[in-house]
Image (cartoon, rainbow, N blue to C red; front, top):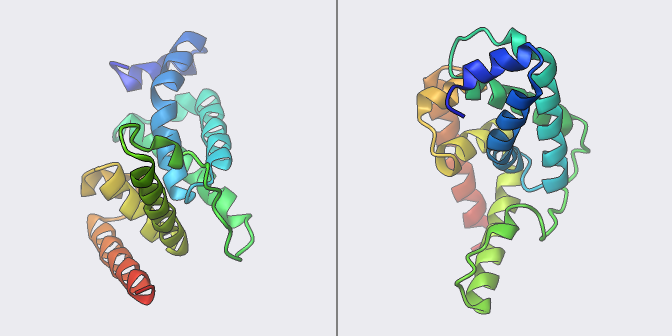
Length: 182
């Protein structure tokens, strides 16, 4: 979409066409983001993204024009995910093997390579799921979404220094968890 902010203005005026274009363009991006934050809970991630877009439909006129509009949308998705995570039991939850991330394996690999990749991906998702939301979110946005620190700081609404600290502690925690398994 050429002008995300213009789309929000049109949506605020009730344009279903603008909403449809925005949804078609941004839904896969936001689903990828939500799935990462939710450690692979694919169906729940889809639900949270749909709820976020429903909120965009209702509140598009509240976008102030400050910051990038995609960051505004990401914050809405993030808040929906946080609400969902708060309602989940604290006990460890097994992540299904057929979740959204496992569906993106390389079709050119041999079956053995694919199995190894899925095993590694499942292990990474399991380890990421053990991190706090703040650490998982910082890692996801930095390494999987390849966003600059300034944009991550805007999305999570904290200073860049805090993002750097979260990344440092998240990497350290992952190293420790991987060391425990050796």
